[in-house]
Length: 390
Image: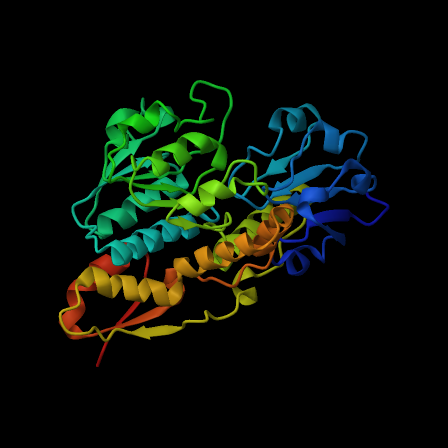
C-alpha cells in the first residue's frame, strides 16, 4: 500500500503528458537531454523520449519503478540493466510508424516534382521491414513502385521475400528503416559505409529516416561529393544534436529528426506508455486520446487538377498541402546563418517547437468522378476519407 503520492518525471517535449498522467501522480517536467540521477531521488515513474539515455548511471540509487519511452526505438535504453532491477519498461513501438512512412512518401513526391521524375515502375529497396518498413512497402506499391526487401532477422521466416543487401542497394530508391544495434547477429552500426555504398547507382535516391548511426557520415558525404549517389533525404544524423553540417549542406533535403513527429504519432506514443503505466499501477485508464486531439489544420481538399497534370503531380499537390517537407528543410537551413556553437541547441529547438503536422487520414479528399481512378492509390497512401464530388 502506497503512503505517498506517486512522483513522475517526464521529458518536457512529450505531448499530452499533463492530460494523461496528471491523475496518476505529481508531474515534474525536465529537458530530456539533461535529466540526471539527482533529479530522480524521489521519482517513481520516468517518462522520456529517445534523447534521454536510461542506464545504471541514471537510475542507480533512485526509487524509479517504471520507465516509459514515448518513442519507437530503444537504443537509448539499457534493457539488460532494467531487467536486473526488475523495472518494467514500455516503449511505443509502431506508434509513429505511419508518420515516418508518410515522410518517405512526401519526400519521394517532392523529389519527383523537383527533378521531373516519375516514381511509377522504380524499384525501392527497403532495408528494415518492421512497423515502418511494412507501411513504406504498402505506400510505395500504391505509387506503382516495386519493393525489394532486406531484413536479416526476418530472412528465415516466410514473412518477407528477403533479398541480399547488395541487391537491395542496387535499386532505384533505397530507404532505411532499421533499428540501431551494436551487437547481436545483425548489427546495424555503419551498415551503410564505404564498402556497401559501392553497390549504389549514381542515380540512386537515398533516404535515411532510421538512425544516424546506421550510416557512416563521412562515407555518405564522400559519395555525395563525388556524385556517386543521386538525390538524398536525411532526417537522422550521427552525433545529434552536434551533427556534421557539411553533410547537411550536401544532402538534397535535410530535416531535424522529425519524420515521426506527426501529432498523431507522438500522441499514440504517449497513449501507449500511459496504458502501460496504468497496468503497472493497477489502475483503469481514464484518459481518452481521441477527445484530446484537435481537428487537422487541413480538414478538406477538393481536387481541381490543371490541364495535362499527371496523376503523380496531383498526388504530390495533395500531399504537399498536408505536409510540406521542403519547409522542414528550409527551417533547418536557417541554422546555417547562426554560429556553429549555437546550432546544437537550435537543432533541438526545431524538434521541441515542431509545428503541428497531422497524418493523411485526418484530411477529407473530395474526388471528382473524372479522377475516380485515383481512389485505390489514395487509399493505399492512407487516405481514409475519400468523398465523391457531387
